[in-house]
Length: 439
Ligand code: ASP
Ligand code: MG
View 1: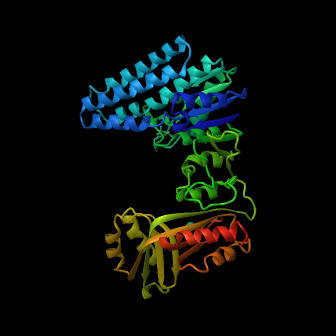
View 2: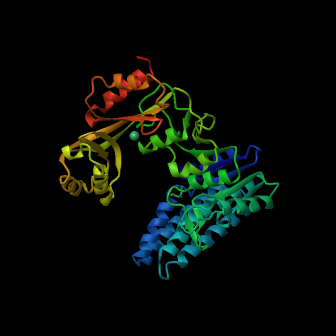
View 3: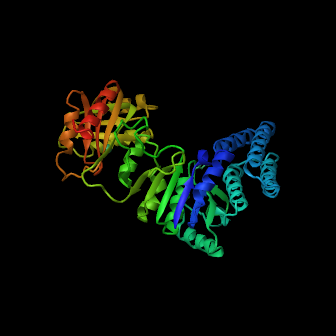
């Protein structure tokens, strides 16, 4: 069985919901995970914000506006009065419920209940629409099986057991619809898997039912040459290893968050990124298979700061790196690239909030140099160290470009260069020419 997830914009209007319905009703049994309609979760956050600030009037105004938007969606979605009425009643009940929270104390607990409404409503709308179309659809309530443990981590044993029970209740159903994002915590309270958590839901469900494939449908092509952060290529990226995808996620590629796909990766279930605007395109497949000797993509990230700490005390000493890293840790600043020599270490960071404090502390250990407006350019692909030639090719492409740092060997799938932001375009073009176009 396949698990399909549709994001907020894919179900963002009545028209889009109809398109999704057409896409999923192909006679094959499947589980469909839906996000809230686009913008809804943000609006629910805004409502909660007014309630935290003890401004029920502000909250009510937004609640009413959101409710009338949903009434309009319902009017456009259904053709029969029966389903229109049924869905309107459900929506009214949910909004009355949200309104009931404007009268009482408001805490994190209440906020989570409010945030859950977007997915509860979108799945109800879709299920009713499918039923109206004569499709054998059932709504599986995520709150019955999606659960986190005391460490706020998903509980795979519970999820599998309860989800199986739910599925067994409806053996004849063709499409099982369920909510992304929402869950119950270890105390049985309504909770969620964090913003954007619907991908995580899909991945957890895929692992629980041992799906043949997990499909993540968005309105953007998962990994395409028109992604502005990926350099132009002649062909879209059709296949990535989970680790190649994780490397690219750092560069803001419109790709899945690595923690969200972890359950799929561990269960060895391929994840396919697909585009609702181009449903017949093959998309990008992410799996545990490596395409031998293939370079997949070149990506870049701006606003990088490089810091070098040079000290003769580092020579033959131990514990020097720990002291340096502890400084970054104490300012909650994560290090991205690292290069070391016997007498110095260079690191790159992208969060400069505490740069001055960090520099001050580092000066205790050595001479510190800073380079701002830098950029990481990263080549992703099968760069297993025993393969020969790829490092040379990448380096050759950088021949004309001043390179501040080079990092290779951190993973089998990446070689990174730190260069000036001003040289980025040139570097990307040259890498693309050397690695993809055989120049
Ligand atoms: N609706 C939630 C959000 O906007 C979850 C999701 O869409 O993945 O964050
Ligand atoms: Mg690296």
